[in-house]
Amino acid sequence: CHYGVLVQVKFIIGKHGCPIPEEDREDPYSCSLLNLTDPGQDKEMELVEVSDSSALVPGEVSSVALDFKVLHPLVITRLGVFPTGPHMEIEGNVTVRLLQLEQQEAVVTACFSPVSPGTSLNGVWYKPVEWFILPKGFEGTLVWESPDLAGLTTVNTSRVKLNSGGGVLKLSSIDEGTLPHRSALGFPGLAGGFTFKIHDMASLWEMLHGRQGRIQSHGTRLQMEDRSLEQEGLRYGDIVFVDVVDTYRNVPSKLLQFYKWSVGNAAFHLLLKTDDDCYIDVDKVLMKIDHEGLKRRNFWWGNFRQSWAVDRIGKWQELEYASPAYPAFACGSGYVASRDLVQWLASNAEQLKAYQGEDVSMGIWMAAVGPQKYQDAGWLCEKECYQDMLSSPQHSPEELRSLWARKRACGDPCGCPWGHS
Image 1: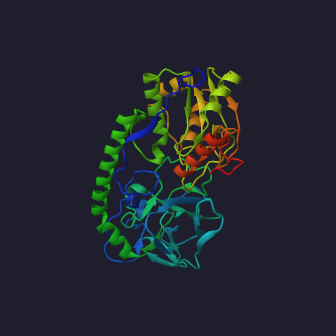
Image 2 (image 1 turned 90 degrees about the horizontal axis):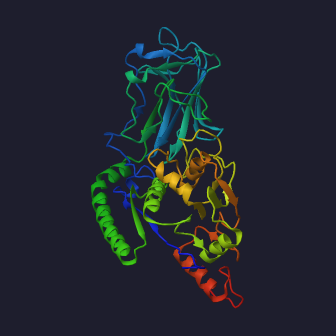
Image 3 (image 1 turned 90 degrees about the vertical axis):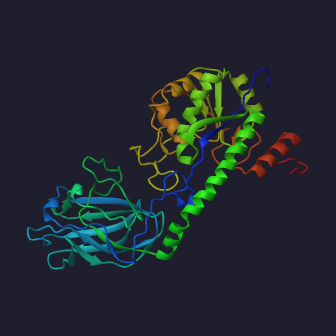
């Protein structure tokens, strides 16, 4: 109880840990199984084979693109195009480029023309390219371009089977009606193919054969974690378990489920959300609420990022939000929302779309409500330290202990005159 105000603190934890060991996930941020299978012998593979030419259809655009992600290292050996003439020949000029997503310079390029068509194999014309090892996690796009509007041939994807090499390739959707990404270099589709070889088959086999043992060991660790968390929750009463798998990508859903819990189980005017790696000066927060009269409705207090670019790759990859920039959102190190906003979020939790991160999701959700934003740089967005800060993120447990030790010793978490550490 501070300044006559009751402060209740809760840790929000997903009821379920991810049952998949981290090395067996598609990425460290989600709980999707790296669904690889033994591809058999070490050989060159084709992305697509066209056994029936009636599956090919004239293209209606001059640029077609296929996005993909590499889930185990591989080498692309040849780039290819579908034939454009009535006799399965190349009639016009076509350029095929392999690029890393969001990069301008091609990794490899192949040019096709009637006088230089390459070699035909299973309904695709190919040309060899310089070999580069594409590492796990590489995100690329294959672009077919023609100077003629109808210079490309595409394929009815329902009539061909795409070869992912046992799951080493994850291909983006090219189904009819797919909305192109705002920065796509071509219309989603397939105007040819490529051949590839899996790099380091030995490590792939080793990973696959050791998977069952890793899953069992990981399951045992999860059970121990569950018991420890349950005991801690019973001992301190400060944990709320919400019904989600606890991963980074699920933090927005985790937050919504906690908001549902909070409006049904706690009496409050304001709710402060922070992360467990953040220093929060609760006294300063409460003093500011009192001195500035911040106990309001339709109120959101934080340090707001504006016109923040949407990432297409990496940890903050966002493929669901179509705009180039997010609506204003508060830094995740700490923000305060009024109860009526939390009530609205809780009431709409099952309908609200969860985007890649909790802070940007909150900004998108709040854009529909239009709360009064109270800008305050005291909620630090980066790992810094100022005596008058309200929050500071990205600290280890040891650093947090040191910040609090200095705060108790001299009132300044950043350092004491006599060098208290």
